[in-house]
Length: 307
Image 1: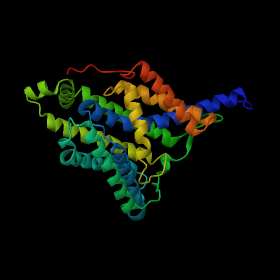
Image 2: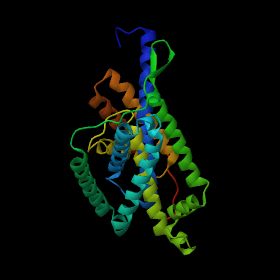
Image 3: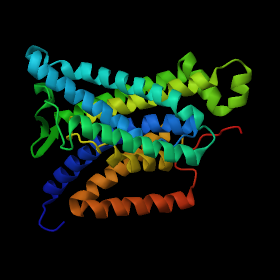
């Protein structure tokens, strides 16, 4: 830190902290769906990152269509792209659960291998359909530029948008799980699957829709991802390890744990990356998480489940 004044260090920490908030937003959007799927069904979905890629590519395609055929629609297309990303990822997730996942319940190793194979297949489909090169969406003007709260600190507007989208989606998931009749069925299935079935809850349908919702949320994460990075066939797989780390560190199935875990990991990585190399920052973060998990194997927050 030699060579920096106190004012410069404060500005650096502020901007790195906000960069960490952008990374936190992507982690939360990815981990929310994974936490719901893993927490309820115990399915380790190695293809979850590819649903992020689906959302990202659908946003890029809408950007190209708007730019080519409807230029007047360009300032507004992104809002519709977020909705389209959710619907497309939700539909594909529903079909994946119906055609493959439902045959593999209570077989964790088979599920792991099957979803890993699905991940490779989807990556090849992306490569064949869109090419191996990374592509970017044309962002509306209102997502460009930065906000300068004080001199020397520039906060990008796209980061603010991703943060607002994360807060809105998190509130929607909370209302879905804790304030809706469907959420009551989801929690009953998580707590005691046999008893939930005995009182008339269709647990297979709960599983199917929960898996699809989790994939849809990953699709929204993909739309948000296009505002901070370009998209390629393996974009989603780059985040899958970090996302699993967030879910396990926070405590499987715990939304509060997911938020706390995503925030601490993203902030640690972002600040350390400025003063160390990116790989060293990741190694130190991973070592810290491993040590904490050795002390507290159930994660930061755990939920009590009746077996």
